Image (cartoon, rainbow, N blue to C red; front, top):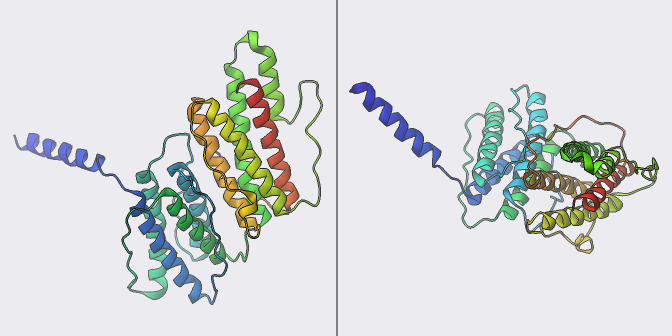
Length: 320
């Protein structure tokens, strides 16, 4: 009888835990607190936070916020190691429907690690989180964007480098290549022509063996941003063909000044939207982690984007 009581209590407790849900406002609170901790650590190093990046996104979904959290944790991993702390675990980015609750757990992980580092430097943590209400995923995204930027500064980067942007856009390219291969393998033998069109696009080829245009030199962050926004238009067309609502895209003319960090943000949206599309395509594959890359330029970033656009256009033409 005692054992049965304990079992029932345990099951009831598990059910309560399973029903916990967190809101965008609670995620916002965590991120705002993480920014306060990161800012205090920056000041301790004699660094000033100037020109915080501003997201022009108005239609962010939990998947977009989750994806940026994954990249934030990579940045935090570097800072933790630099400060002789154990790095935080890095989550996977998958093609599932993420919720604010999923994002909250990553925010908690980030805040906990920053609080530990802060405590090791200053002792008692007198800073406390604030509470907010009625926050949207887009407002949460802005706080996450600011935190990524602050962590990058803590890691000694005065600006987001082309290498950082390149490593992220490569993640998107490799993810799309894997999806095209999966979709090609699903086609029947009678669709050999379509299969060949998808597979050749992976390598930047046309079925007649002609190649994607060669790399253009002297490209700027402006060019890369314009290409990223063009990619997102094609992603929206694919979303609509798969009975998904389009996601609002910023107008290039609304950017007062294009910075590498603006291009970085678009890489995060592209990765997230590819994962959202994978749900429609019934593809369950984890997006690869970022690989360290050195010596890249905006031209290299632009060329990777060209290949992504090339594959998406082929996919739209073949399967819609």
